[in-house]
Image 1 (tube, rainbow, N blue to C red):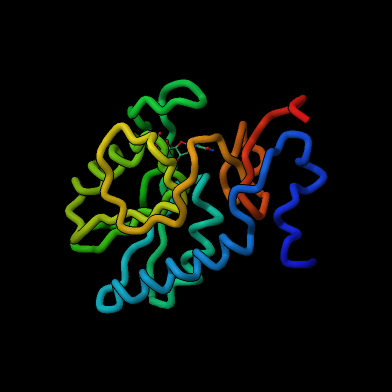
Image 2: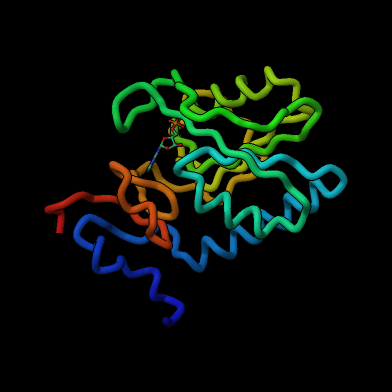
Length: 190
Ligand code: IMP
């Protein structure tokens, strides 16, 4: 594989993908930087990483390995009421945490922040469990789409407000297993 190979959509998904937004190589390098920043910031008191399923699964596992600290890991699954492409801000907890948050630093690991409503809800939910702190590490932030003010401690990339898939992000549960992040244009667009 040459170093531009992940810029090209793979044959099994090429008919629905547009341009590459972030290649696997660029993702990898940025995730390593984020891991190093987290390791430096939390050196004295390693956080509990809370991955938000399913979108953050790839990011969570890579970020945890890039963070050279004895972090704990736990997962939540949430589903947002509303249409498929528009978050309503009302979130249902599909899988709750197992960890006790009392007195712990919590770092929420999110795939993408769009309106910010999901994250806003999650932050309040976690803060009610008496943690020492709640911070957020979001891989992607969609430019200009936020409907609430957000305080994101770590952001991987700011991207234009288009629908993207890959590296955990899906459309109807597909394309999560792409190594890079691509715009989704749908069938019949090529
Ligand atoms: P928010 O509540 O509007 O910030 O929505 C955040 C959630 O919507 C993310 O955790 C994703 O699950 C989903 N989402 C938003 N934009 C995209 C996208 O471009 N591709 C895939 N999922 C997305």
